[in-house]
Image (cartoon, rainbow, N blue to C red):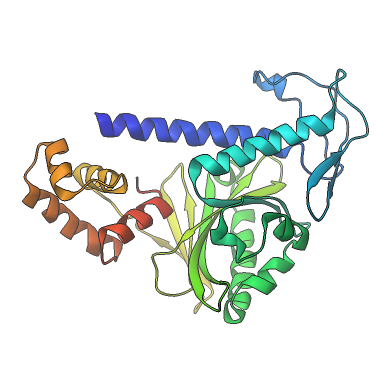
Length: 305
């Protein structure tokens, strides 16, 4: 029961964060119309539709406002929403960014170092998508371009309902200060301001990959639990069967992600320590990983928990 409650709280937290992010994003793009969220019964105030302009400077992001709403300064409002994104970054403890794909620029980049490759977040925002040409390993740039093109083509073929539940992830290598490289997993989710309209933003979360090579692009339709894997060799999407974990395996993975030892997991679940080891030995081949750390990372990356 404890596991289910924690899972439900986590899902609720993610839903609330996504809702708030969708509200924040409506403020952030140049010459976009402010959305009246009050009509959806969200208690964030009701303002007239007006236009705002975003300018990105080298050391800070600020809102050059044309008008204020009910006497409230839009620059202060924008800064408050940036602080919400900063707080979100601190809470989830992961690298993420918000991007405008059509304009090839970043709207927001978190301060977590995994994605920054030695740059500051302000420098990455200023660079826009040219950051990828500087930070991604040369051999992976073409792969990234193909991945970007193919998942957008796939996305455009979906129904409006399917688009609302779409995520896609793929792996590529980033250069690190000192000459090393790391393989990261980028998971993208389009952000919609209104139903039946094209998304203006993409929210991307960055994690270390558990795979051994670049590529590994998987598109997921979350409402139907369908997964599609793209083959860079055949240039085709193929439906794949989602990995199924038992309730006990998910419990053990969740407790392991909290740093529990085998003994503590056994005591918590009122099972023998040998049973814990047995379930872990079943989990590893299912996820194609070598240890519990990789298993937890895989489960988080592919939403198995």
